[in-house]
Structures are given as structure tokens and as C-alpha cells.
Image 1 (tube, rainbow, N blue to C red):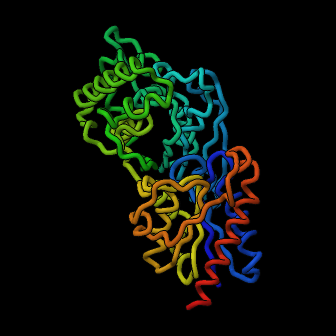
Image 2: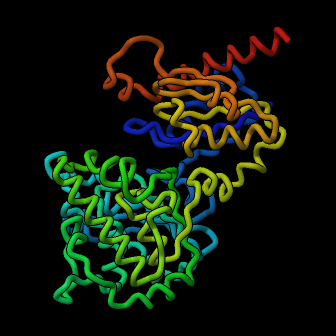
Image 3: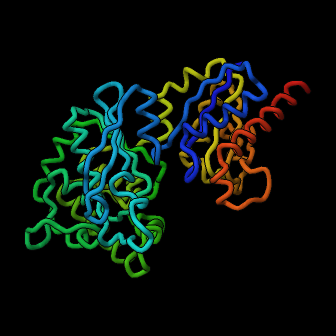
Length: 380
């Protein structure tokens, strides 16, 4: 019997690798002699660098860069085993997790440090870049990133704009748009599951700004700043970002990467599965076990469990998902290839207890699930 274990991280409690180990322990209590292959996953958010680095024989590096509020912070990036691909997670340098709740303010938070990481990867000889843009603390279209990379974004007085949404609102012109040609020679993929447009009710500012500390008044200022940004981009670079799916991702950095750096949108989970050789491993598998902290109908939009289930379905491999929480689930999830869903917890408990005991709970959940699977096999 060949079993594939391919979970995402359980946010706040287990990395994808820790989750895979726990699931294996539970399965081996019943299927002790099974051939088990662990292929931890990520979908462009936290953990993508580590998963891709391990899967390709790459290495993790770190650098001192500018944090979201302008204070130096230590951030990691990865060089993959091919020697020419770098992986950067925006959250490392410009993430919400770097700030306390009282510090969140997208009017001033910047992506400058993300730009510094991109520059480091290029200096290391990278010709390809994979940019995971989840978990950002910013809403400035990637303008800080562009300043770090040498673009001259200036105000009406010809001075470089400041950090954050406030600085972006002052943008008057791009003085060196020709610099884009240098970066467009790179192969840049944006690993994201966000399809939101730059502006509007589901855009960067109105949909995600409040999560980053924006008040209602700030949201409207940020919306106007991004609208101004789009106008300047179209005039000075000849690129229309207003209809770009994913342009509103991570506070509009999706639009900035696309317009200035020539980046293209990509599915984070598809990138990870392709580079880790998931398709090859699925051949001949009896079933696959995946999971993450929460599954619901929104999971069909690029989340790891559904992404791997869609691929497994092509190989005729049934998929079991173990989730920390189960929301509203319809036939869309099952139609995507997930055969069954099991919950991590065995009964009512406090969230803190579930997080603290996550490894044991996940192992127990995996054992319960495979026992049910074996029952179905015997009934047949």
C-alpha cells in the first residue's frame, strides 16, 4: 500500500513538515507496513520557501532588511537547487506578523524590505524569482519595493515619495521607467491565490485595508492613492493595471510587480506541486492525506488541500482532508477531488488547547480516518 501525505501548515500550530510527521504517526498505528511518502505543501503563503527549498535541495539564507515600519529586521529567502531560482515570501520583510496590533498602519508601512530581498536574490545570480505575497502589512502598491530596486518614484517637487500609502498619494511621476526593461529580463512569478482587482469594493484597500489597521477614513485615502498610482503607471509605463486579476493582492503589490517588473500571476500550490514532483508520486498511490487549519468553500480558490486534490483526481487517487476547523462545505469541495473530510479535534475544546496539543490530535485524527478507510475496503 502506497500512501501520500501532503498537508499544508496548520497556521499557528504546525508547519507542513510537523503536520506530515504527525499524520504519519497516526497512520502507522494501523498500517504499519505501508509505504508512506511525505510531500508537505504550501500555497504561496507562509512555508513556501522552506517547502520548495527542501524539495529541490536548495538552501535558506538571511539578510538584514528594512521592516514594515522602517526598522531593520532579519528576513529569510531561499535559493533553490537549480542554482538560478530564488524564493521570497513578502511576509518575511513586510508582513503583518512583524507588527503588534497597535503598530498596524498601512498609511506608513512599506514594502522596501521586500525589494531589498529581491535585490539580494538577484545579486546571488538568480534568473528566476518566485514571490509569495501573502500576509502583508502594506497597502502601497509595492512602491517601497520599487524604491529599493532603484526606481525613481517622485512627487511634484521631484523628490522621492515617502513610505506607505501616504507616500504613494504624493506620487507624480516615474522618472526612470526604462529601468523596467532590466527586470523584465527575469522570470518572475507571483505565487498567490488572490484574484482581487486593485480598486473597488473587493480591491486592496476596501477589502483588506481594515485587516492591516486602516480606519474607514484611511481606507478612502488608500483607495485614492492606489487610483493615482494606476494613472501614473498607465501614463509613464503604458500598462493598465485596473483590470488585472490579482492586481489588488497584498495591498496592490501584485499590480506593481506586474507593471514594473514584468511578473506574472501564478497559483502558489501549482508551483509547489510542479517543483516538488507531486504528479510523479501520485502514480500508483492508494490514497492521499492532506489538511490545514480550516477548510470551507473558499478553499477552492487556490488553497493547498483543494489544489492537491484536483491533481490527485486526475490520477484516480482518493483524497482525505483533515482540518482543524470545517466551515460551510458544499459539493464544490467534493467535486474538486476531496473524497472525505475529518476534523482534527475529537470533541469540544478551547482553541488554545487544540493548538497546544495539535501533534497528538492530528496523529489521533489520522488513525481514526484510516480505520474508517479500512472499513470501507473490507465492505467492498
